[in-house]
Image: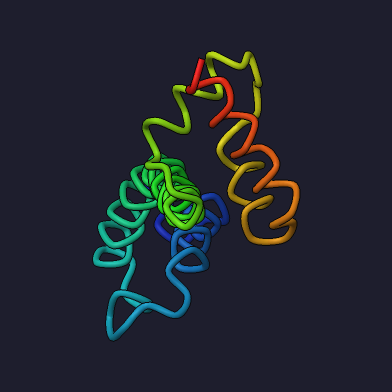
Length: 119
């Protein structure tokens, strides 16, 4: 029996790869053999990027909190330690957002922490 080289399954498989490679530069978007490698590598970068995004946002939140706390006369580590001692459980994303959008609430939080650290 002859081998099928232009069947729909083969075409579908190749089309799926080329659709994923749409927008790539040069033959990476038109040639199946090259696009296959490009799509596989893009998948690796995407997987790694999903992990890195979490780290990057945490770094951003910490930088924002640190800047806001330094304006109040504390440093970041003292502030976080004071929050733990005051038994205030609030995540860094919310703290960062508070420091930007609601400065009055954030400064009252800092004053609470300063009171706890003084004792």
